[in-house]
Structure formats: C-alpha cells, structure tokens
Length: 239
Ligand code: ADP
Ligand code: UDP
Image (cartoon, rainbow, N blue to C red; front, side):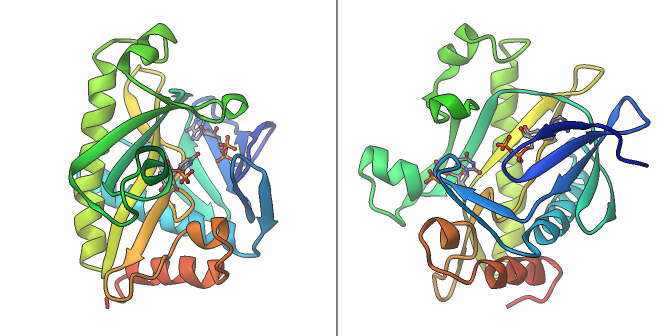
C-alpha cells in the first residue's frame, strides 16, 4: 500500500491517504512534545519504537476482543490503519495518581487509587484539552449516541484490565494512559491512534523508575533507553 496525500500532520505522527479509501497510513515521527507543544525535541528512533510498541499492543488487544483500527505494520515507521472519524474525547484511565490528577486535586503523587478512574478530556489543543464530563460531551455533540459515552468508559476499563495484567507480568506498573476512539465506515467504535510510552505511564515495579514520556516532560534524560526497555519487556524479556 502506497502513501498518497498528506492528510494531517500532528505533533507525533503524519497521516496519509492510500489507494484504498478506507485505509490510512500513519507515519510515526521522532518528535517529542510536552505541555501542549511548548516543549519540543527530537529523539532519533523514537517513532520506530512507538510504532513497534503500538503494533504489539494493538495485536494483544485485538486478540482479547477489543476492536481496533490496526491493519498492518509495513515498515519501521509506518502503520496501516482503518480510517475513522476521531471522537474528540481523550479517554484517560488511571490506576495511580500522578500528573494532572495529583496537581488538580492535591492527591499525593504515587497514591494507588481505590478504583480505576476514567476521565474525559476535550481533544482541543487551542483550549489546552480541558477535562469534561458526560453532559459537556453531549452539549458539544462529541458522540453520535448518548450510550457511546458509557461504551467509551467500558472500553477504557477493559483495555486497562488487559494491559495492566500484561505489564504486571513484565514487572511494570501501568500507572495511567490516554486512548482515542473513532467511528469506522459502518459506525462501529474502534480504538485508534497509538498506545505507547508517549501516551501511557509505566513505572518499574521494583525500582519505581519512570519508563515513559515523563522522562522528557521532567527532563530526566534517557528517553530512548526507557522506550527500548518497554519494548524489550513487551517482547517477553521479563524481569
Ligand atoms: P496530535 O494531533 O495530538 O498532534 P498525532 O501527531 O499523534 O497527535 O496525530 C495523529 C492524529 O491522527 C491524531 O489527531 C489522531 O486523533 C488521528 N488519528 C489516529 N488514528 C486515526 C485513524 N485511524 N483515522 C483517522 N485519524 C486518526
Ligand atoms: N496523555 C496523553 N496526551 C495528552 C494528555 C495526556 O497521552 O494530551 C496521557 C499521559 O501520557 C498520561 C495520561 O494521559 O499517561 C494522563 O495524563 P495527565 O492528565 O496526568 O497529564 P499530564 O500530567 O501529562 O499533563
């Protein structure tokens, strides 16, 4: 499948049309951004790592019954995906308090939450992706049916159950993650975008070491080594 026209260039990926109206090619870039693009850098090889990690995680989730946009990984930096109409809701699922949750509500960083928390954020860079509730989603007309909001929460929780236990077996705590969904041609809701250390937080169970984009956000260094370690664990080199 050949890339045709550039459809969209985002902070971490480019999307291209293909010969097939129903399929897109996502190119994973080496760019790293944080704080809504205010902090920017490039890390050679990061795109390929995220493509590989996302590929493995989409395949795992598909095998457990989660519908995803994943089709194929033709090479290092490209993923063939089903075209969807992205739902402008970032679904954030949290097991441990950190990041914006700790900041916003004063919950001590690292506190294990009593239950899995699912939050919605409005995917609007110009508004800084504000947190929103179900009623905001309906007022903003973000989903086609009211029941879709429950479906997004259900899928978020189910993805969490699968990934949390998968990573626990690899010695990693899945702290939190962000997922995006979209409607395919038939109106089905598919998991889209990517699942990678750019969009998840992983803490090593023994050392507590951060193995995700927080290394970049917090200027800790060793970003690529951390992403490589996540891939290594996924591929079965368990702790
Ligand atoms: P951002 O837009 O936040 O800068 P990216 O650089 O990752 O993020 O850009 C990828 C864009 O592609 C995102 O806006 C994402 O919602 C969108 N996207 C992901 N998967 C699909 C898909 N299967 N069909 C259409 N759009 C998609
Ligand atoms: N996240 C993301 N994209 C965003 C915002 C958050 O992938 O635009 C991910 C982030 O990597 C983390 C989770 O969602 O795994 C929760 O992030 P949080 O709300 O704590 O935001 P942050 O502290 O990064 O501002």
